[in-house]
Length: 113
Image (cartoon, rainbow, N blue to C red; front, side, top):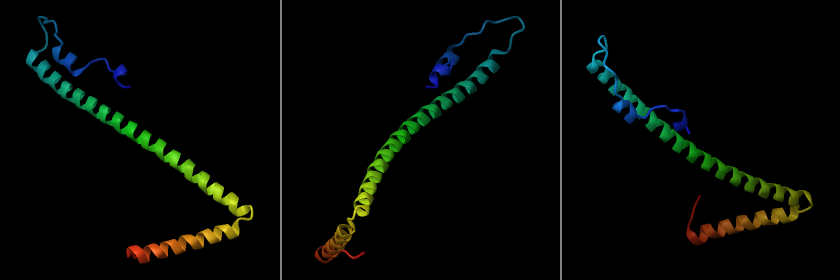
């Protein structure tokens, strides 16, 4: 993703050879500075890779949550349609049955909330 926008790799910086001129820079200073550039460049590349990995993971999580949201919304809409179409007595009897099952589970399994 970002690699297409980068011109150099840390290895290319390390291997770069400069022509020596009569009034050129001190090679030791240039090498020391380029070593710092290489360290920073390497760290930036590691950060970019980590952020890309995190971004991919978050996008996958987001897709899963959206699918779950759509599924739950469909269930709620279906329940609302049943309730609004005269299914109130069924809805309440189902609620009563769920409460009874919950109470039975508490007795059988000894679960107290």
